[in-house]
Image (cartoon, rainbow, N blue to C red; front, side, top):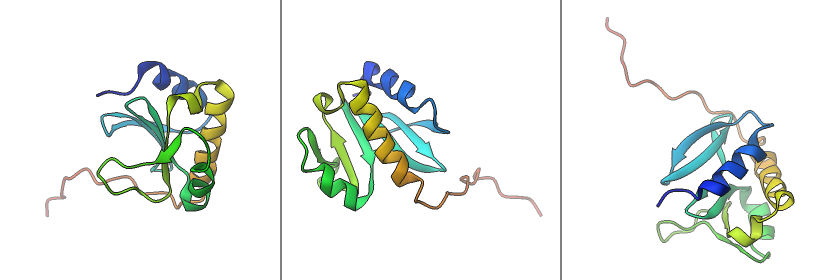
Length: 119
């Protein structure tokens, strides 16, 4: 299943002011900051990488659950169901939390192209 197109467009607008790169992951859209995944969409839910401390706080809120695609929840990541990011204010707030966490991570180097230099 692909990402919810309406949520995808809303997320693109919310992410517009940040230096994100966009890629397809988990069958949906994901936004990266300095090479680190920050925020995305899985089916109809918002995916956030917010760190363990913020995730513990977020999980106390309605419409937030652990990110679990494989049967093993990912620490520091959460899903936010559609009612939890329905308004622009809610979505902007979640994106800001994810950006703040992503800014604490070391930048990743660009992936190798897979080509080796000939000697």
